[in-house]
Amino acid sequence: MPAVIPPATLGEALRRGAARLAQAGVGPARLEAEVLLAATYGWTRAGLLVRLAEPITPAGYLRYIEMVEKRAGGYPLQYLTGHQEFMSLDFLVTPAVLIPRADTEVLVEAVLELAGREQGPWSVVDVGTGSGAIAISLAHYLPEGSRVWAVDLSDEALELARTNANRNGVDVTFVHGDLLEPFLLTKKKQEISPRVANPLFDVVVSNPPYIPTGELAGLAPELAFEPCAALDGGEDGVEVYRRLVPQACRALRSGGYLAVEVGWNQGPPVVELISSAGCFEKACIRQDYAGRDRVVIARKI
Ligand SMILES: C[S@@+](CC[C@H](N)C(=O)[O-])C[C@H]1O[C@@H](n2cnc3c(N)ncnc32)[C@H](O)[C@@H]1O
Image (cartoon, rainbow, N blue to C red; front, side, top):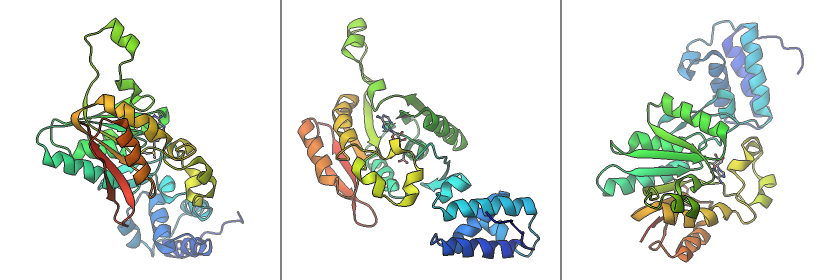
């Protein structure tokens, strides 16, 4: 980076940052520059906008311009600010977790709608919880008395998800493990204590990795900064569903629901996988607000 000569005011710094982002084709440039400058000082955007005529400190400018340069190189805005809003709640995000997407709110809303139809508290498990966005939103919005578990293979993700649950004041039980394995009793365990039953959930919800391995390299540059384990869905993109569906069959009570997010072209193959498991009623597909297939829901027989 060339020697940095700080401008006189915050407003001028904002103009320079926005021009740099626009030049790099990153945008909306002015808005993102505002977000980064506000984050530099821990202010809200409104807090920044009333101070534009004030002088900027050299150290503050350096921090800001470093973030602008990273952003110009495609690094995600949310990893720079450390925050993402989801279901009107605030989540801390780091490169150890996928940045929660607005599309995934369709999945959470679908589960809340199911819960709204049936009375009483629910027990839900979120498989592949990442930042905890789904589990924590459900714990926040489900009826009182509901219990939420969340599982992930990544210890770093689980640590962040625990912090997010505390910051949002909800109780979620986080478990390290492979899909629903931690909740399923193996034959051996059952032989040792035959009277112990599997815990049975009302809902298994998941936004698993679902991008076909061969497509990872061609994705939007920003996705290259997100954890591969959160994206890679194996050769055909549906490998995780292939293992999850039969496990969900064992982990759900009769009448319970499996609700999963899918890629725009994965609705029919995931419905087919669910149908061939033989323990669910006919699955249905829901679209996101852009009209693409986004969620598959099936009720256990
Ligand atoms: C697409 S991300 C979803 C994160 C979060 N639920 C969301 O919607 O923003 C998938 C998550 O699944 C986790 N994961 C991948 N394979 C897993 C497995 N076999 N068992 C448990 N978690 C897994 C990844 O670590 C990642 O956090």
